[in-house]
Length: 274
Length: 272
Image (cartoon, rainbow over all chains, first blue to last red; front, side, top):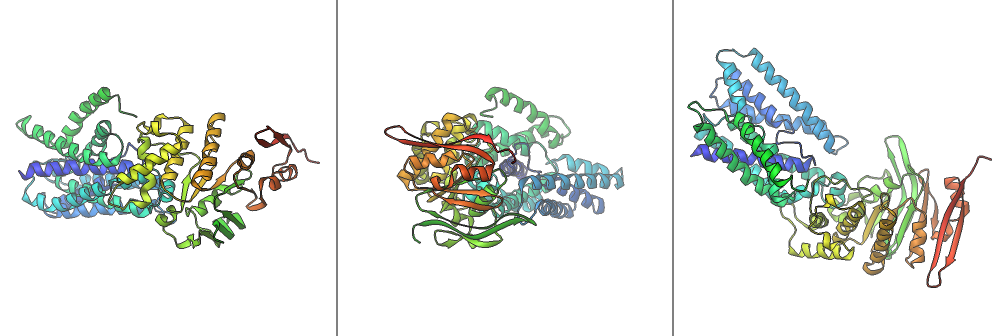
């Protein structure tokens, strides 16, 4: 049971943050890991596995901490003249992500190849195989707060997607609003990554499936993404458990099954109004 | 003083060391169209950005109504001043109605979204500029001219007394330009809106004047307002030669019901 709840929450977190980031950066190609939270958290977990052992509580702490550090770094890099131009944030996020990716590689390189390296690799693939009550306790608060926050602020994301100039003249403090939305998205994604590892694809594709079904108004898109993300990951997790006798890491399955499903939808809806 | 919508007093602005404009002063009266014309790069857009609060002037002050905008929050300023951009980049296929509803952002709290009253206001705004039948269309699939009308409807939904337009006809064809100008005349006449408009077409000022709209024209060049007054005072052959180095001819013609006035460029002034 905790496993199904967690899978649903993780799916919802990644999907909602992805949808929010796409609106925030007015770029349909970004996902929930945009500002480096996934690679930051991945590095944190890898480092914790390297320094301690594979089921240590430090994995959560390190993953959450480095995920937050990565986003903060991206934000500081993107900040110029007291404003945060979107293109600078995207660049900052890309740079920070690649730094943390190489740090992950470095951690793997120095890890003991018989014990630690497989643990790191397996963790990075993403899985719910080893979830426990502890995961629920650690992951529940940040994910719930993040998801609820983004759902509450969802209409503002519409306005922010008009770009800084227009958002400002429409009467909202775009820097502050952006910071709040990024904060919620980071909480949700970091919470998700620290219980399940990096599960790709959801944060990019689920919002697009949502756009095909409900349109681009974030007022509808964010809740729809939340439901779709949760159901999608619960279903995939069930498949991951039952498909073979040994469990397939879910991070592999999301793209393997999600890809064809997405193509099917694209053909069915002719891409909505894109 | 009560009839002034905007007062700009000795305003100067520079990007780092590069001065864009300096010691600019002018008043915009309520219910008039205030046109700013001038060559490319003369600082028109920067000046508008300062009135919109997007940029902060280095010296001088800008009053909107009686309030100095220096310490005004975006929300308070948006209740007084709305903006129609030169080009709007359409990134997501939002419905036209969704875009117009965004004009209600300044009146909507951070964790809520527009209510039925807001939707009614948005509907009226779309009706006013004649795009109500587009309400459910994705705004990525309408023409550039229609999109500009959507921007005006959004500004109207904001319910501010002043609308700032930055070269609103820059990308429009012959007919759409006229539709936009007629819409502006309509807004000033019926909704008592004050319009501040940067434009590259001097004749827009004559268009408003001959439609009996109170019109003031400012001629901007090299970061200062060189001339300011009613269109007839500013837009004469002499000034056009000075600012644009163009020989021109002012033509007026009585159509019976209506008077038209245009300044027509003839040739470029050769260095003497």
